[in-house]
Amino acid sequence: MGTLVIVGSQWGDEGKGKVTDYLAQKADVVVRSQGGNNAGHTILFDGNKFALRSIPSGIFNPKIKNIMANGMVIDPKQMLEELHGLEARGIKDYQLFISNRAHIVLPYHAALDGAYEQFKGEKKIGTTKRGIGPAYADKANRIGIRMGDFIQPDIFKEQLRITLKIKNMELRQLGLEEFDADAIYDEYSKYALEIKPFVCDTSLVLEEELVKDSKILFEGAQGVMLCLDHGTYPYVTSSSPTGASVPLNSGVAPRYIQDVLGICKAYTTRVGEGPFPTEIEGELADQIREKGHEYGTVTKRPRRVGYLDCVALNYARRISGINHLALMLFDVLSGIETLKICYAYELDGKQIQTIPATNQEYSRVKPLYIDMPGWNEDITNVTCFEDLPIPAQNYIRKIEELTKIKVSLFSVGPDRKQTIQIEELF
Ligand code: IMP
Image 1 (cartoon, rainbow, N blue to C red):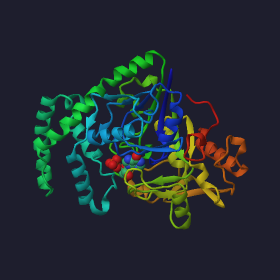
Image 2 (tube, helix red, strand yellow):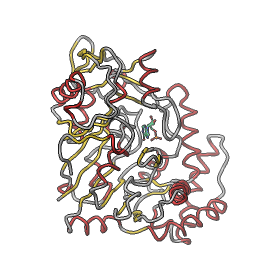
Image 3 (cartoon, rainbow, N blue to C red):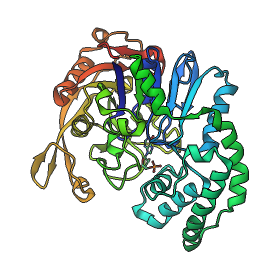
Image 4 (cartoon, helix red, strand yellow):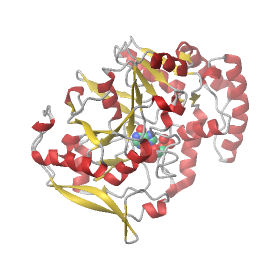
């Protein structure tokens, strides 16, 4: 068996796309199992930069089967734009399979997403406003539209009519413009026609590959701290980006999940609202933000920046079964005199090693830090662990000590070539 789950172990944007792309060189299949175009996976190779949103990161390799699985919510219009964008840049030879059980995101979802945020005022979540939450809510409410129905014109028309009746009632009450079922149908049935050849039962495709002992990469989106169940609720996304969600969201048995690679930055970032204990502001935060290009791929928002938080990493390890770590954007830390790593929190005078469930408590925790000497050397050309300056080696060793997870890979720049594998993975 060769399955590897790639999980964001912080608040998303850890560099999952880059690692997936790197490991995909060995993969037969790449699967996106949750989320939608709220994700932004940046990939750089041979001087070309690509920003993927809902399409799996294996799309550049014609030999790889790319699966958009049942747990995703897919905006057909955006997804086609993304695909056309890739085609226009020469990515024409690809294999794409879209689950007939995945849900679709329609314009009223985005309208409601924006409206909820506006009504929440100061309590807003800071969503990507792509309609992700409302689409998952419709799924749970059993009024969502699935790919398998979307591609059948009569069924799509009928489902849209019923769902829109309910949605328009809500939109009216919120004082928003209503949507016209015929107008959506006319536009979206064209997209359905184009998407139809890709739609199938992706769980069967996966089973065939598992039987053949193929190498399967599950590409997580967002991060464990944004998990609907285990994250910093309500400042989370509406799906579960944990390793545990992969079997359910892709239709494979849990026993097939072998290894879980947690992707983490050498520091921490967060977009949107919600507690962030190790957050820093001022000159150092600006330096990291600029050097690490810490602006949202999807929304372009400046990301909040903080020191590495090993309490959050340990939590991600526990919840997601992470047994390897990939340390990303390591080069960004060059030139900082002293680096801090959070090893525990203090809450109401007591030391704790986990994430409190309530935001009231979580916003009160104080991070406890270990100071680590930094390094000034440029490490962007390093090709092995031993080439790193000693303080950088010590930084990695300290993370391993605090999280009890082996750092199997680290990254010193955006290019595929700037990925250094310490231990064989996958
Ligand atoms: P939503 O997923 O658009 O509903 O947004 C909910 C929260 O998750 C917000 O704080 C977003 O900024 C955050 N979020 C969603 N997707 C990503 C991602 O891919 N990277 C980082 N944060 C994300």
